[in-house]
Length: 510
Ligand code: NAP
Image (cartoon, rainbow, N blue to C red):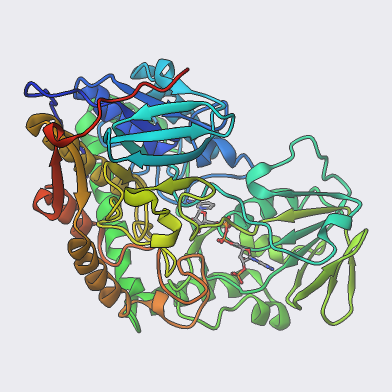
């Protein structure tokens, strides 16, 4: 399944835009690769760390891997045929992104260790004025933000946290220098990350206490290494990998049906998860603790073959009493129980609804994007926000999925952005700004559709804001998104010709 289209961008007497890309995760790399394929080299990628891969560079916790099969969790136009297993682990995924960067000679475009502090649109010059946290200033005609939704680790404000005498860290900032052998480990959170690292570390720890607020629906993961024969066939007959990819896509796409309210598929997942739970957990009290009371799909359905066996271990204790505070050497729950701990690991996720934070993005009239989003982030097709010309987001508001590959969505978005750039270059347009009424129309329809989904119902998740607005998830099948994104709706954008721009373009002082 492919969402990528070959673009060929040639300015019709106009200016080749200077493009700033934020981040070298899948989204930033995809944009850069497509720009190169289209013959555009005038771009700079700003990356806050010292390597490419985004979330796959950051998340190096034991057992880190993707719960979307790798043949689909990769670019359609850079199909890797020799994935070692169905669900590759983090080192193989990150190596894939590094190989992509190398193949497209992207390193020379990347400014590593450069974090963006702010970007402000200057109407007079039709340029984005970008500042780094080091105070450096740069200019760009177009900004493509590829920072995604899961880049700011979230650590809850728990009383006494700073006074803890042991070691504490977040799963996305794993401390590989800390030896867990024989230690009392407290893990807070049991989401998609924790279910991967807890089974890995439980055999090492002397005791592991899992602080669980809400149980998850966990179903088996159909994972295995590819056989030598399969790998040989994929190598000899590339079309087989394409068929394999298409089959994975269709199977996952069907799973969207589980997200409809009261759906039959949701019940099927629940039955599968209960069976898995009952086959591993004999203790009725523990079974009850691990059984969710909300419909499957409301939170991400998790895939694991070793989560329940880990929960059944003698040295693992599942604590469901709420945490009251953290002491110098313990986590204390509201019932007064003291749980001694040498190490606390926060598997508490990311600040997912704070899109673009901590960057300060200002559009027309100096308006802050966070003011435009005071009732929750939203964008036109997840990509553009009215009043923020030439600013495009990838994996932006309402483009997250619970059932399919986010890379498919990113390719749809990059295809859309490339068409916008094409339009600007062909028509010598200084800026494109999505019309507010088009953005409102899109979001009204999207939120109406979300009301029919399980996410609107009775469970908390990082998909929605505290007020309950679902700001993160796409509302339908990915095929519907692809259909909407295959051709950019340029009639829904206000266009300002370059001839109308007051001041000449500025070069920032280096
Ligand atoms: P997460 O799914 O948001 O889980 C966070 C966990 O922390 C939840 O169990 C949550 O409990 C708990 N928590 C949050 N605040 C807490 C507090 N104050 N006290 C106690 N517990 C608290 O985070 P994640 O596991 O890092 O995963 C985030 C996302 O990353 C996933 O949904 C997925 O999209 C992505 N991810 C993907 C993969 C993959 O294989 N593709 C792997 C890892 C992560 P509640 O449930 O009660 O809120």
